[in-house]
Image 1 (spheres, one colour):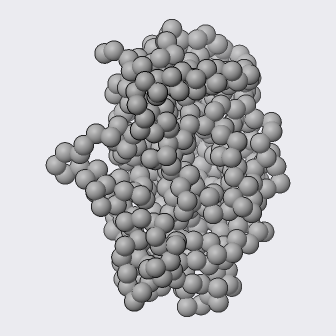
Image 2 (image 1 turned 90 degrees about the horizontal axis):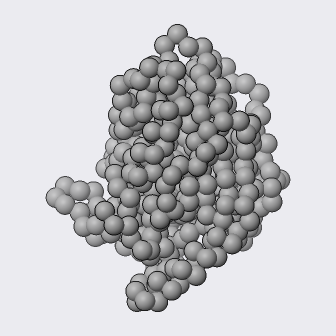
Image 3 (image 1 turned 90 degrees about the vertical axis):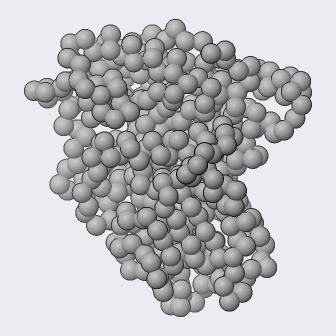
Length: 473
C-alpha cells in the first residue's frame, strides 16, 4: 500500500485547507520538528539487554513507601493503580489479561475511528457522533489509574480515574436513580455550601455544545457516551475542588445521576484532555498550562499527577494538536531501536502520528513497524521457547521455571530526536511483547500506558511539547 504524503495527524492539525497549501505547510512543520536537539531519556541503563524479574508484575499484599519524585513543586496528588494495595478502591478481582486486552481493543478502535473520519456501519458506536460529537470518551474499563481529591464545602473525598482521552469530569451524586457501587459516599450537592448547578443559558452549558442541550428545571444537563457503550448523565455544575493542598474554586464537573454500563468501583472520572472542559484547561490560569504524571511500574507501587508541572529536565518532542479533535495530544514517532540498533523502517511509516493516551494499555504501531519490532525482539529472545498468542499480543514466550528474564532494550525515537529508552516493565506484559499491530500503516497510532510506566510524562500544552523524564516513580 502506498504511503500518504502527509499524516492524518498533520491534516487534523492544519485544518481544512487546500491540498497545495497543506503540503507546503506540512513540509515546513516537519522541517521544524526535525530541528529539535537530539535528547535521550534513559530508564536505568544503556545496555542492549535488561533483566526483569518474572514475579515483579504481581501485586504485593501491602503498600510500600512511595518512591515517586515529581520534577517540580506544582499542585500534586498521589496516583495509584486501581487494583493494587495502594489503591483506595475496594479490593476487586483484577481482570484477566485477556479481558483487559479485549476492552483495550474497544478504546483503540474508537480513537482510530475519531481520526480516520470513516463513516460508521450499522451498529457501530460511531453513529452516536451525529448527536453527541463533543465529549464522547473511550472505554472506561481500561482506566487503570486513580487519584483522590475532595469536592464541595466541606470537602468530600472522591476517588476518580484519570483519562487524557476525556474532557468532562464527573462524580456520582445524590440523588442517584441508577449508579454503580463505589468506594466513597455519594457526593451530596445539598450538603455543600459552594455547589452551584449551571443554568441552561450559561456559557458553561453552551460550551458543551450539543451535549448541553438538555434541561431539567432550568438546569444544564450533560451526557457523555463512551466507546464501550457505557454512559453517564446528570447536572452540569461547579463546586470547590480540593487538589492536594490546593483549592480550585468553581471547578466545573458533571453531577452524575443516571449511569449505564459502569461498574469499576471508582467515584467518577477526572478529564485531563485538551478540551475546554478538562481539569487542565480549567486550571491553566492558576497553575499554568503544563501538567505531568508518573504511572507506576506495577500495581504495588505509586505515582503522581501534577498540575503546574515544571518543564525543565525532560527530553521533549513537539506536541501535535487538532482543532477538530482538541481532546487528544499527538506526537510523531520516527524510529524504534531494539538492543541498541535501529530498525530498518523508513520514517514515512510513522507519518500518521500517534496519540499519547493514559487510558489505552498497549501501544499500537503501524503494521510495517510492528512486524520489524516483533522480528527483532524474537531474535533477541531465542533462549526462550515461543508461546501461544494472548489476544492482540502475538509475540509471546514461555517463561516457565524462570525467576528472571533477559530482554533486549527497546527505545522509541520521536520527532526532534528525543530517544526514550523504555523501562523493562514497559516492554513485556505478562509473557508477551507489550506492543500490537495497528492493522495498517495509515491509521493514527497510540502510545499506551504500559510504555509510559516509570516516566514522568509532561504535557506542556502552552509550550507545544510532550516530555519524558526517566525513573520518576
